[in-house]
Image 1: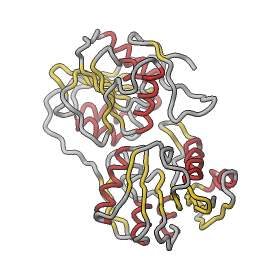
Image 2 (image 1 turned 90 degrees about the horizontal axis):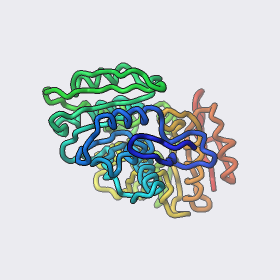
Image 3 (image 1 turned 180 degrees about the vertical axis):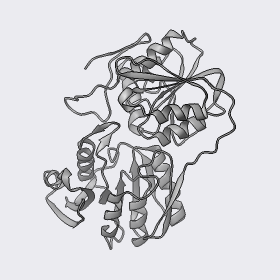
Length: 374
């Protein structure tokens, strides 16, 4: 894999989660452009820099020890990648302070470097939160590959920060440079809310939650076919999103214990708020994590999962396959993984390679619900 070379550092970087023969690199031309632009400003060592949405730590690791850098992301995997890449390049795992997207930032920043996220609602929420965190003379610089840079990103920067200048494209990457001006305080439209008919619950969704405006059709197909009569089973909602699968299941299984896991901090925040609203102080485990990577082996009886089919802009079944492997490891012998998936993804044959029995629980014209028994 090529090294990331910038005026600040030369780094050997890896993506997360790691896979053998990784075909993709852990940085892009937008990272290089941002770093070159900042270097051209010759920032002092005391310059406070906030980095947002740094996919695998390329920006923050490059700036570590050169300026006072803080990295904030909604991705557990992104912050894990930053720590691992710091170590990989001879720095301590915690050399850069990190702030999950569910938590507030501290103090004022002279420069804010933003990788434009796939979900523009997350960008909007971040720009609103920047109010009260920009030092005098601050600059907000957003970057993306041109093919992933919608016009709306510049509109949001102008609305919440100030006048925007678009750079020339370099290696198919572009910068949007915003100069802060005094704005009336903005009220965030997030979290959004919607009601579910069955069970009758309200769901709150922070800005980066999948399908935050309404229930996604895969989950809608899954809900009527959740396992029944679970008794005191230990159940995990893997990739929990706003927690709807676990909450719907828990309402019908009052003695079961639930663990809700997602790699998005905002998803876990949403799930926690929704669990409390629907189930009060009932015991639950919630965590942002790399799926079930930290779950003890043979510690679960049931896993519920609506697996993702992309990571950032990359579409594929790598993450789903990894979640199936994690579920198998965490389940007791005789335990079961229940999933919903698009018919065309062929999950039945993939699960059959890991589990001793796979059956179709239900199907719609677009989705299948499968049960895989260990």
